[in-house]
Length: 387
Image (cartoon, rainbow, N blue to C red; front, side):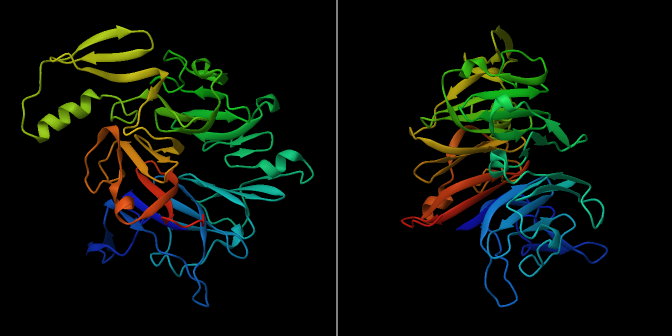
């Protein structure tokens, strides 16, 4: 399995070989915007063998890669890391871990018998927080960060937040200021800040405790993700549901902001000012030609991906979204200022568009992980049975 990345690269979290210049101090200045999918450098051990990367997690300035060979370990790329990624050592503290999660300030590591939370802004030799795990408990085998037995790890103090065992949490996605939880039965719960409709309850109010998204009741979901101010999930049947803020087209719905930007790029005059049209659960705007634009979608909306396809998994950046189909194609949409959509442009999109690079290279996409301003994809050669 190979990994590719594209988008924000100011700290070398995608690639470091593209050196544009040197600054006044003589330090290398890297390519900030990577608009074409670029294969990540493979780490090699002392014998020259490549490590197998099984998982990637990303924050704004860092990328954490979990290597599966031998003693499992984590390698960090980006801010504060070695420039020569291929030869830099794994974090010694991470050896033996089975999962990892990174934020701007902390790295969480899941071991068979414990969870460790490390402060990346300090050089402590011990974790800032530790949670012991009962290895004989059924919940210990289901640790999937940021979920941990009894709750989850937040990016801000208090780091441990409890969750009711009655929720039977299967996965948890943390957005900018909200959370989306998927239960073992496929129900979706959300809580946190709701000012942009990102909770999906039909209003803009916040929720302190997990609340079920009633509009999805009775439709089991298999995957869920949270962006800065939007949320998405995939049903067992492969349908995609979206809700929240659509300012940059991250929901795949018509965006007034993107339409105006497109007109400006083409040199056309912007149309008459849009008039707000009040609707239940949506904040819409109507243009001079009867076009309807959606700024906030407070209820889950079914999004059609054309041509019709079944989706397998989805991930969200701050203001962009990426989804993988069961046939191995990658679709992206939303904010594209740093090339995070992978279409070899810096344009934003308010409708899903297939990333043709992987089709051209005969690569089958099997997974996707979005950082706030970038995207990472796991691929295998088309026709290969390896994952």
